Length: 524
Image 1 (cartoon, one colour):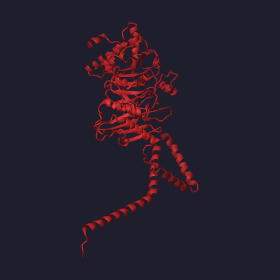
Image 2 (spheres, helix red, strand yellow):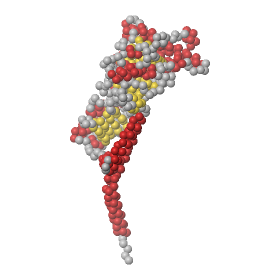
Image 3 (cartoon, one colour):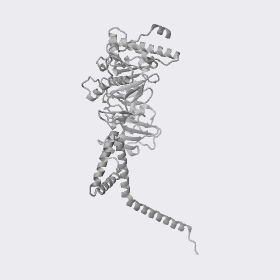
Image 4 (tube, helix red, strand yellow):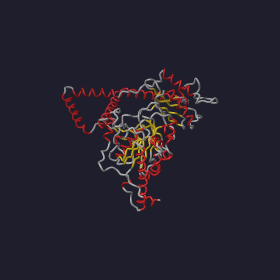
């Protein structure tokens, strides 16, 4: 018996194996074709069941009983109608098939206009991402942009909303000036008037550019779910902070979770004082009103010095917890003198309590808030009258306010920043910039440039915030207008009126506690 050659045997075995695979693939495809309608209906039923569970979870508890009664009535009607159950089953299967269909959009490339926009953007980046000695340049004039732009998206007008750029490893992405040039170019070529977020991946040599959605401006002042010592400065992007707060955006609306920018104050705070800077009409007074209402909500005492004298805080005059609302030079000086003496008195009382081994007195633990709106105006008026600047009296609360549970908030305009003393810049580690501002102006206040591109037109209360050495957050201050301003929205004014404390009773006003001479001598 002749032996067959080994290669021929292996060849026949491979052919048999290939035929077996074809038969198995054909059988699988046939089974898939048979089961495809069932798979579609099963996927649709699963989607409908998940939607029903979400709808039931979102239904308020007081409305679940009527919803159950209505559903039972519909089932009873369907059961009594001739051929009702059969028709209901057919309708359910049709709805399941509709929801379970494959709705994945077909992968399509960019259109002609979109490809032209990407090509022009690619050509604009060539001088920044190429060198003459590169043997295989990723960016070159007349090159293919699809190798450098790996991900992109457009809106309906055809403008870029998302773009991922691969750049050469020799690009100096670690230098702020180099990155700023690329960001400015992308901002100009992709469309101005929008806010862009740039995320640099230095390890992977990639740059992600995304258009940020506008922050919500409909959130009015309300009682936020915070603990004592926490103040909501405003709201920011979802990925910037790890906490959310339930807020209402209008009367009768259901609360939804929004990420806040929370500023912590008190004896253990690392940023005990705050500086807010902006242009006229940017919302710094709105921020001060919001802070004052939250401080009064947690049982603090509020002292307001209004330099402009426009009556922005007249709604707080005579309210419980409001020590004073001063507009003149004389009243501001007297008020700030009391604030300095009160800070010293609290320090002495707390020191004596610690020496005696007992907790600090109740009046020392009660927080005091000193809010100053445009104090440079008072300094100018005092200089004209030949008086000393009352703003100099803030050095004691600024230097020792953290230990005495005294918080200082200063709101000033860009044009008068040079009039702020060194104590303000040294001790206001929490910073806020509101309104339209350039990158240089934001950097001068916050210490670092913003992580997004500022826009020339922003709503009231829109800006940036930075707490200490932390990151820069986009910020939208809650709408807290003057309730007596008829030009503001009615709902926002009513919300502020609802948060105002009651009028203080006669004889229950706060008095200025004197700093006893023997206490001062003992501390010295």
